[in-house]
Image (cartoon, rainbow, N blue to C red):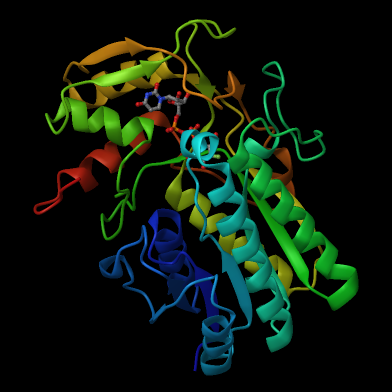
Length: 328
Ligand code: UFG
């Protein structure tokens, strides 16, 4: 009998890739998902428990039925722009939902907890490399809600013995190289899939949000990390906790930033097609540059983001979006 790991958001983009990585490492991922943004078809590597983080009884039932040895907590509202227009929803769903989850885990005696946080907790810091000890000053409600959840998780250690690994993701991109799972948001808001949609005619053009940022070419700089590399980091984080190595926060990025224009150029090179685009205003809540200091995850977890190059991320995303039957 393999051990179950409860994966909230296991039907979503990153969660589904993590489920694949867990299964490959010999665990059985239990996807706990309300399917509000996830896809039942993406749950391929273990059972699906359809439930909502706002429903403590559903959480208790999932813990009681499967007795997971750990939780990987991905489920969240995660759109920066959206969080600026409806902050209340981000606080309610992300923070209250996570509090319910942490409390249910403690009730069930499931005390190993891996939390998906974000570089958006750091805010806008003049393009400096962000490392795990950089003070966190979020500039959008999404980042603020994730920072609050980090505090909850940390508080539950001394009080209830909860052990945690916090991962602060930079910009996640790409798809499973075998195209078993991939990115499919409703609506899609992320740069690389929107660019591929413009290239393949699923939308008229990509709009570049802002050209007057204090960056080399005026467009926002981000540190892109391949979703499969990110999934592998979660297995390492789980093993870290199971080995009793203690509470730790890790950035997951490559240490290299690319501007929106550089991503456009890379997409042109990978696809051999022009990217139809228009120039638009800045999007509320966007930091100018977010680039990871990535030494800790490499040195302590032994993590190697080997597929996290723009050509591989764009190529894998392209293969996924060109699969027969794909729609967005
Ligand atoms: N962008 C455009 N046009 C678009 C979409 C995006 O120019 O149509 C730009 C954005 O302004 C930003 C960059 O491309 O500068 C990346 O934008 P994404 O929407 O792809 O990603 P975000 O940086 O907004 O957010 C993502 C995740 C968050 C996470 C964050 C960390 O959605 O959950 O990365 O930077 F916190």
